Image (cartoon, rainbow over all chains, first blue to last red; front, side):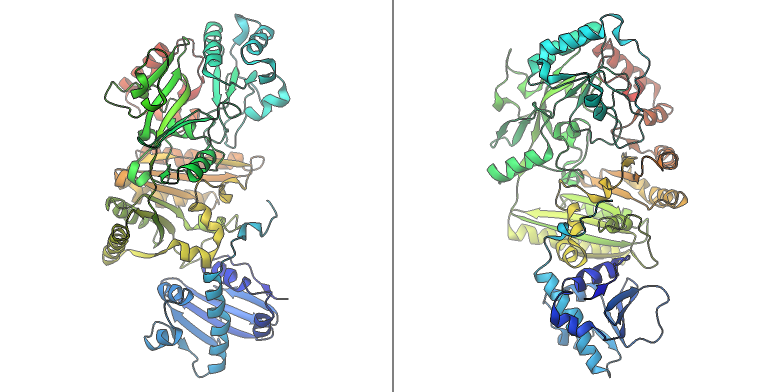
Length: 140
Length: 491
């Protein structure tokens, strides 16, 4: 069982939607549980967001971001959408410097993150949860 | 507690006799004077004081209403029209008691849809949801326009109060697209206005196709909040439904910078609709009732809808929209333009309620109270208004909720700060905030619509006296016994 923090800013709301899409999938759980890494995503024009994978939890941080993270990913919103909707190949995006990483030497971290993030994003884009209104039935 | 303002309604006729007469007109099953039935008609979601009606009637046809109006006029009994009680201005609260006429139960028929001249002839109780269903199922080549309102809101009420819709950038106010009205005036006359005026007794269903060129008597009934007569039929324009449609999302950083963005895009004349909301509103849609903006987040989200009948026309519009945004960027405005459908899938499909109108919008219904300063606004003042109103929200510790629209290709705009609140806890605080917003916006030239009486009182302080005299003369002439929705506009 994975617990994903509810986002309170635009980027973590998106990431929470994206990651929640696969949270019950055994393959995804295997990737995420006990990964214990900190990833910084910097979407140009917005603000940096830290994703913390800790045991079975995924949390987001926008304030007091850790100076030392395991991987930094930078892109703009157009690249993000192009990757999600498969208009852009991630390898091409790296070569064209549309997708930039710091911590490239930790190749395994990068690959695993791409497997978690990019794949989930592409899945949500091609098969969004159209029954979204059935979630959280609690009425205030 | 609900009450009725002092007005000795039953000096000419005893209340029991009124009830008896209403039973004769509408049938006893369609009349009530029981408190339990009357109570829901005594209030709405706003801060406007609740008042009980004396009776509620459910009409079936105009003949019954003619009889009602004659009777009420003779006995000076107020008549308040009611459809779904969704307005955000206390407009159907029977301030002086009397008879509430509930159109929603039986006078809710779509009488005719004219495919050739593209209009729908409606009874007052027809809702946006019903009209959309009818068009989608039987006339998919035609479309109507829908407001930022739930499907159970009434079409005619919104139209005759000059509400707006999701084609407003192209068409302007909904009041502009009325072809004809049937109205009962205080003396019980049934009047047809528009091209349907031909025909001594009845009008042909095919005759409701234009408002002009005769003297425009429609102005006597539009925006009067039911103070001049009872509208019993209304013909509204429909439009061809183009096969290609897309909504773009403009993400704008910098509070006042949303103003030039929506104004410039409006002037391109290629966009069907433009609406913009504070970024906090986007978060409200995903179940964050009290969102806080973090540094670096954008300030506004704007939706630009475009449509086209052919691929090349549609692509040309897309290209021109993108070019307009690029030109704004060159002027130093930080704005991102993305496909709204693509973005919402990755963000949260819940925000699609802003695209798929009419819709129940969570942020508007999740609290017991809802009120606003809904106004027509001069678009050149938006740069001043936005930060000042935003500061007022922050001063009162209320998450900013500013909704704006660009009307008729930027000829004017809609500026609508919206306040959601707990009616039983925060009403005083919210009313002071609304009061400050109203004073600021009226001073900047905004003109509220669907206005509660306390707000028209503020407007009357600065309205030209000649206008007020003419307004009062018309009201007194057309409704000498003040039976139609008394209290509105401080009448």
